[in-house]
Image (cartoon, rainbow, N blue to C red; front, side, top):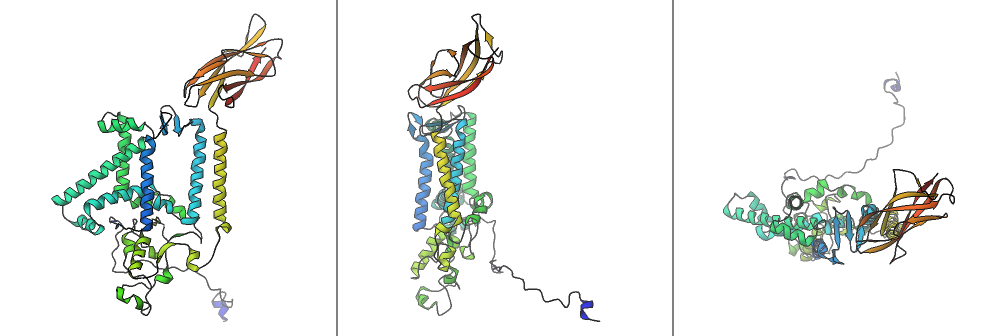
Length: 482
């Protein structure tokens, strides 16, 4: 019996070899204990990137607390007044009808973030993210009271004594005070800051104001004091999709494997012989892991947990300096940098796409801002009757004009009715409105019955700022006659 009758397709040519994506096992050695649930006490690190991060975080925090105290024309520069439904932004008053402008700003900010990510990866997370800024503040307080990372780990394991209780009490007291200030800082964008701080710290604030301040204070205390890296690892969506925006030219915190491997400890006197012993530049000091806020080992490759804060870069450069090795074994490098390939961002589709999106959004914002009217007009017809006939053979229609002054100055407006036919406005043509005031202004439009055709005609109400004639708004409505 032929072999092909026993085994199907036995005479068929062999199938082509399958190609698999290479996988590198980065799991720890068998005897290494890994406890992801344990608290990360990362080590303080100094260096160029940490000085830059501290400066950027400090600027962010200073602006956060200082902006509500800036006044323009006697009013808080940035204030979202929920009761009056007004948003004051450096002399510009935005109403709910203008919130499309805020939507464009948020979209432009998102594309701007994507644009920066193409160049430098997650630098936003490492240098400007509020979660990172407040986490480092809380760690700074913790370090000043409990000591270095090793001392904090030992204190965690130590039994409860009066010394431990005193340190923990002082730490949590300062954490709570920082959280309370943060809660006040956030709510001061919704309630005038000078009144808020005084009422909160004197106990005279209302129930709801106090509740909201303490709500955000508790959130800050939990996020920066306890959750920390868990927010970056499990709650922040940016960590999950940021890799989609990377390409071979994106500079991220990267370990140069070809130069660093094989890693191994050595003495400083032996640095000139490490090549002879087949060792790379990595001395396996583990400092890059000890200073990482998220507790990862950057030598295992690009990981979504990395926030690009540069702490491991400063730690590694410090070690390289001690051994007189070349700097930036760990540094801000791209895939093409490691390969020695020259590149141009002008050829990158992501660079062109995100850049064009940012420019378009800025143009839209400018056009929306320039076309924004400082007057709001809404015309409502009298619903009781379509028209009324007078004894002198005239027809009148009644309307209710809702006019709002969207500025923060007292304004005088001229009200007029526009049409090709002879219509007359029976009302005071000039009205005065206070800052942010809205009035219901009843008007009557009169016409000679014989001078206009029967049925429905279109007329237009025009409201013009007397001081600034370019500021005007109009709305069409119908006029009915027999």
